[in-house]
Amino acid sequence: MSTFKDRILKTYQPSGNRVLIGSAPHCDIQIENLAVKPEHAIIESTDDILTLKDFSDSTGVLINGKLT
Image 1 (tube, rainbow, N blue to C red):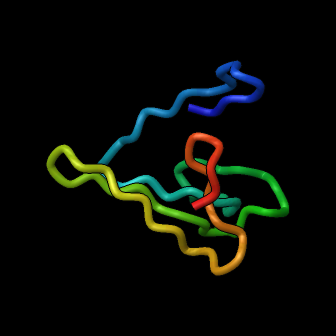
Image 2 (image 1 turned 90 degrees about the vertical axis):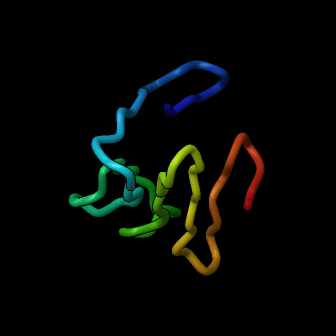
């Protein structure tokens, strides 16, 4: 789900157990922003656990408004 000023802009339904996030056309979730790398992060699902892996060295990832 993408939000802006507490409004939902878009929701995403994953098609598998991993979701690639980035600016590249092949990403499951594409974000067109100069701060987003072509392959920025991945969300992986194992059993009932979601894991976010950040591929960026400097830009980071915001989760619930907090930089990780």
